[in-house]
Length: 68
Image 1 (cartoon, rainbow, N blue to C red):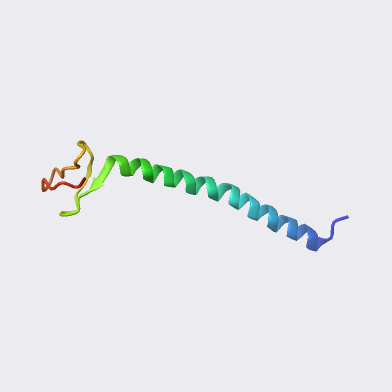
Image 2 (cartoon, rainbow, N blue to C red):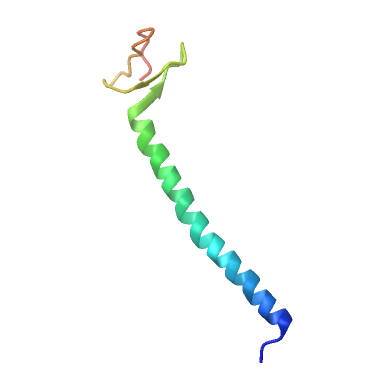
């Protein structure tokens, strides 16, 4: 038969394991989304305007500076 202290330790370890099993995939997916977004979105170094990258140089539609 299981003692109360062993049962509580098992509950704590199970909770820790479940937390890790949820936390790791969520963090990996968030990183993947940031990488995908960084390929298509830019922030201008001069004026700070956020825009979609439409050309290889990354020309800002607001101030016309190159952000490539």
